[in-house]
Image (cartoon, rainbow over all chains, first blue to last red; front, side, top):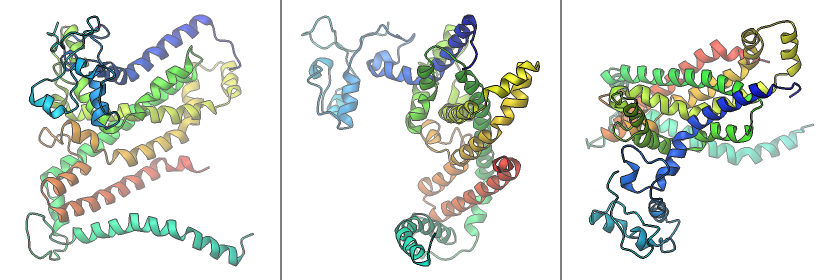
Length: 115
Length: 290
């Protein structure tokens, strides 16, 4: 970097580089965001980008499926609707329930109605 | 100075790895060759008799073969085109001093760390799904009818996914090559009044020629055998629209249980890859000579 770059040019280049970088990174970012969603929210139309009910349920289930983590009681397993025996959960037809973070000890609610 | 004694010791010491390589490479190849000359269908019991080149004839006259060959070439060519052009542009951009350069580089390189199967599933279910995929949502937001990617443009979809995975590789190689270009050379050209485009075509691109060659050769090796992306997204379909040679061999062996035919297909794929390699080395390999 021998030469000085005009500040305006540098800002424009930065903007362009960040935009391109985020576009290329977007599928991964979207995957990470979706991992915090419930099944219903993951496929909602129009999508909820940041303002949805953040839940660890799916991540917990993934970790348990990979045998990385025994169960999800620390995260309030039953509260989130996580069932260690996920085939039983499937039989019951539950595809994922969300936790109401503001009302801690309430019954689990079913998938939020889309919109 | 290697004496006769040290040389024989060295031979003994490399012997285990040579033996291992032999076991891992020569034996499977030999077995594939053997299987390709016998009648070996898992659904047809009976003696595995020698049938000469029948398996090869069967595989080469399969109507799906020509399609598969074309699809293979389209995938390789399309991904190479996207990654080389995109990689050069990205490398030029990332070479500039921008704010948060390290983070931007990390963002651009990140797709390379995603497993092919995972990448394909992410694109299939979250990007290209015609109902809730991001592209469909964007199209609906703009008031356009969403595209059903894997039904309407299956080959293009596969190419996009694979190109997304390989773009970081091309960018990385080209960026390192670009960083070895001396600043004085560029400055001298500027002082002589060369336009930016002239600098690009007469200084930067010739400088990148060898790196581009490396990218083309390495990517071609891997792209000839694209498989996971096809299996998890379209399963070779619709029809045989996205079947490439690797997938055709898989279908022959594990969907039609014809081990002999699949082995012949594998040998044909090896021969084709060698033909492509010869052409590539003829065309661009001279860039590699120092």
